[in-house]
Length: 199
Image 1 (tube, helix red, strand yellow):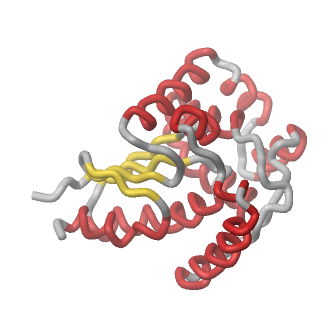
Image 2: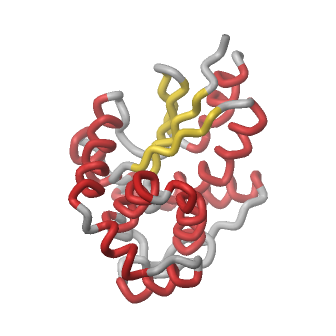
Image 3: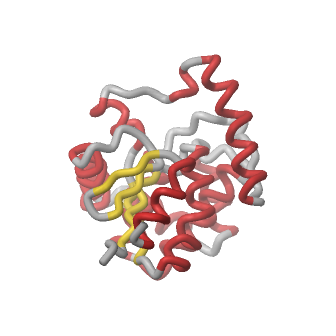
């Protein structure tokens, strides 16, 4: 029997992770898989794995921007490059961990709001005031959110999740696991689907 768990290791700051995010729920639903969200801090993954953002290579960056537009068009999803990129996502990723730990019923609404504000209608989420506005628009209490991301247990959870991801072989995002098999990049989702379907 194929493994029916799809682990999605993600960071809001990665545009290719956003593209994968637009597909993972549908893939899980269509294959009967359980989707497990696994927030990580991409900067921490890069540091531990000795990796760097692909946009640090100018020629690769130019290619990636064009390629991401192609993938968005193929999947029929909105995508706009954030003019404030790169954005420090530490607070955002602590928020994802905090929601999973303390407010799981609100987690996907939070994820949807942040990905939208990052890659659909881009906002400067490094700006605390702008982040507060995005949270309020999505129905969250910004003060309560800031208390959540300051919680030592939440901070420790993000560190632990990032370390687990690296220990399992991750070197960037998006990374997916189906059982013990790792897949990297939004352009590997066909392999993820096949693994979940037992292909």
